[in-house]
Amino acid sequence: MLATKLSSALVAPSKVASKLDWTKAFGSVLGIDITRERIGLAVVEHPEHNPEPIPLISIPLRDAASKKSVGISKSALSELESIVRKHHVCASVVNWPVHEGRMG
Image 1 (cartoon, one colour):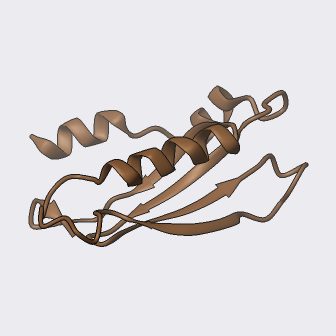
Image 2 (cartoon, one colour):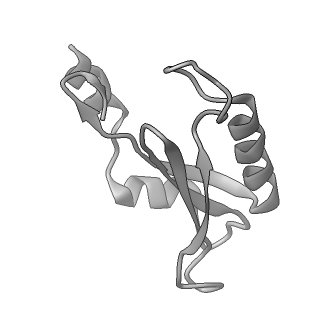
């Protein structure tokens, strides 16, 4: 059942590109790599403006003082919101590995 729900959310890259309409777009795409400890980030602007991805500093997934094993810290959410505003993010691509039904 999970695979069916996931596959219904996936779309071809050409469809994503047409939705973004990068010929007119002002925004950028945020690449997000989620692991147990951190959120890796990179921003990609329109290839005409900057053909190379811009790597950003990773964000810790949880506060160092937090003992919780699930969830995301408020500071991480705040940092993500700031990045979205600063780089005018209009879409994101997320890598969230799954292993045996749980986050990898």
